[in-house]
Length: 205
Image 1: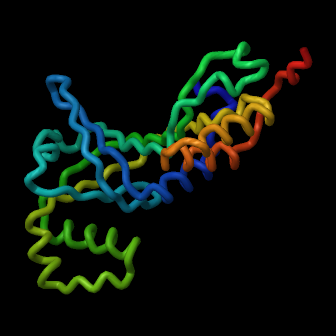
Image 2: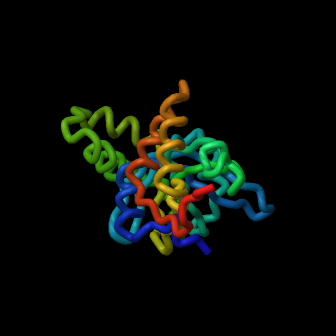
């Protein structure tokens, strides 16, 4: 169960997915071995469209159709207890992040026409004026395998120090902004935008 501090609404989860535009497809083989491939996707109301290179052995290990998940993770970083009041005594250091996982059933499409349509839809989503001609797309489609995944469940949480006091959150953001790390800076922005849901009272000595 996700703590209420870190829960995301349906709208927030869908917005995060749309902003990401890509995630790690995870499937299991009959022997329990796990395959994982980072892939861009097009998301619809009930289905996600993906494709991968034919030389990627992941698709061959999929017993189509079978359960699968797509995992997306936003900025993440270590958060020091030194920023908690008083002087870190109220808790342990942690790791802040946002993660959303889509669960469903994956199907392989080894069909150049299906792949061409899906690839053009993906390109059009990000670059409507991509300029790829039919000859190039037809040739490329032969080297690509298509995948579709139903959307059966979406889980997600944004652990962004919402359970900390405003003073603590300000210190966390300041420390992250002072690090020479782009991911820390991006996380600092996420934390600053997240609502504070702390219920404890400030320490007064």
